[in-house]
Image (tube, rainbow, N blue to C red; front, side, top):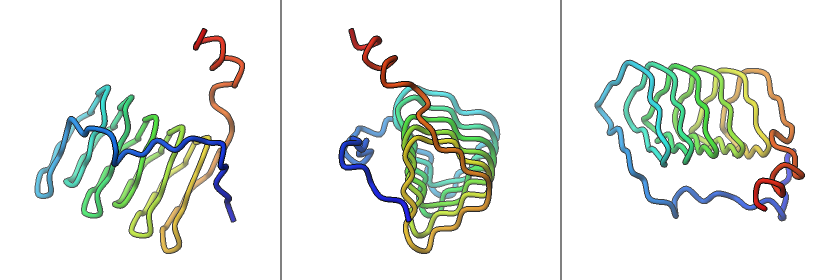
Length: 131
């Protein structure tokens, strides 16, 4: 249904250092804001915003909105997701609207909501910022 663009560079979160880990059995209520990659295996009630990226483990649950550069969802998100790159794995469930540039959904994953896919930052702007 969706084909991966070979020109698009995937942010491999597995290769990046995870600076924050919320382990299984932990529950956090409140907003989480950060700049690096976070892995959540516990439960978070509140919005999660991170510049680096998000890995939501199979037992992980987020009840709130997610905003990040790159996200890999193995667990459950109940809220809206905004990410440049988003992967929903076969164990992943997203109940909310998604805004993204690239999306990969594995067979067996569940998604209930509205999808908006468009280039969030124009290529011209990316080039101008790099100069």
